[in-house]
Amino acid sequence: MSSVFGLIRGFYIARTMVPADYGVWSLVAALLSYANYADTGVNTGFILEVPRLIGVGHMDQAIRVQRQAFTATLLVTGVVAALVFTGSFWPGLVAGQYGANLRIVAAGVVVFGLLNYYQVVARIEDRWQAIGAATIATTIVSTAGVVVAGTVTGHLTVEASALFAVLGSAAAVLMLFAGKRSAPAWQVDWAVLRRLMAIGLPVSLWPLGFTAFQNADRWIVAGAVSRTDLGYYGLGTTFGLFLYLVPNTLAMVLFTRQIAAFGATGDPRKSESIVLPPIQASGYVMAWLAGAMVLAMPFIVHYVTPSYSPALRVATLQVIGNCLLFAMPVAANYLISTKRQALLVAIVGVVALFEIALVAVLVRTKLGIDGAAWAVLVSDGLCTGAVVTVCLRLFDIDLRAALSRVCLYFLPFALCLPVALLLSPFGRVTDVPSADGAHLLLLGIAYVGLSVPLCLAASKMSGFLAEPVVAARVRTHLPGALSTFLLGRS
Image (cartoon, rainbow, N blue to C red; front, side, top):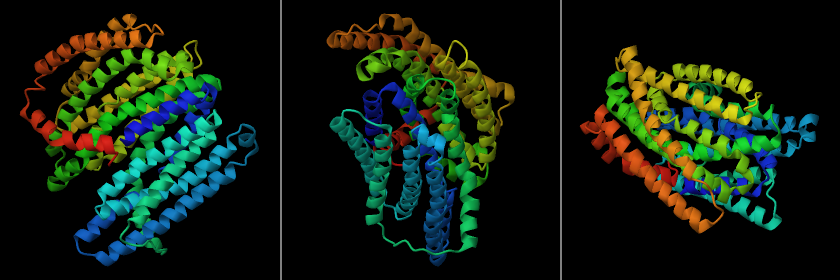
């Protein structure tokens, strides 16, 4: 449900803002995503350390660590927020109308830090329903806020969108605070604070690094094109990030099992059955969705965000690029569970540098923002291929066989995308909603009729569906994955 509200909110913002403002919003949204990690790993260390202490019966130490986490969250996010707030008065930022947005981001740094803290507290206290309710409240408040602001004023501003994003998280903080079983306390113990950061920061580097990887292209594009073109470019992010929730949800469900499998034996090979089949399944699902979106995008853009019609091609490329990250959530969590996050960050860092260089070159050619989208698409495919290859090598698969297996995982894209491209010339919008609806339905039927048999044949040839472990994993993890996707529980 929270995912659906988030998509509605993204579409409403795009539909209500002019493309030039939406370009600025895409940058502010990127800054807000970085603000989630401003606690420098304190709360990650908190969630890793306290359950361990409780498990061995050291309740006094667990309470002390919880108090230190609260103190550190306020200290660290307060310092970061103060720096951002002060920087917002820089003359160039004020002249460019970014100052007010940065001040909202500064508030978001503290709010998001407290939200992370109280989510950890709720997890430790086993209040999963409260976490789900708070997550839904975040999206409802932020969505309702932008809808009311846009309806009342007739023009949604970037500042209003950012403000309600922060207020939605503030509502979640209040809900989790009200249901807590232990009161926070200010207590400074520098030794414990350093330990929390030492534990949490290395683990936090991965989500921060991947967030930076996903947003790096926007900053390069922003310096090379107009605000309007940046707005067109930013539209594809709304679609792409929503689709990325599909494999990410599966990864959330599997992560604890991956940790348990490695922790029980110390052997990374013991996790093979909960890594490789899900990766291959994600490949089929995301390839099929990529093809479906190629056919649906002309209708979605025309009817949902009509002022963004020039963004159709770039948005479609960005959707395909995000789908090519199908294996990243499961594969990355596997490497983290086997304590190889440093290797993971290094791989993504190298690919990010390649992406930045390629975007910087192509965006300045006649391809413009389309060139930037092509650069990201290629980089996403390379990133997935590299990370999956490392995982396969941990399962004692030699390099040549690993590369062949990676190609096999990408095979569904080579089947579904050509089918979609073959049908796409028949997907022209007529401006008659009833006719276009029927037209899209027929395209969908044709796409299913052509792509599904191809995927089934490919999976049969590869032996994927014949593996007993696949059916078992689907039965085991599908209910949890659907619950996580719909409720936003992590």
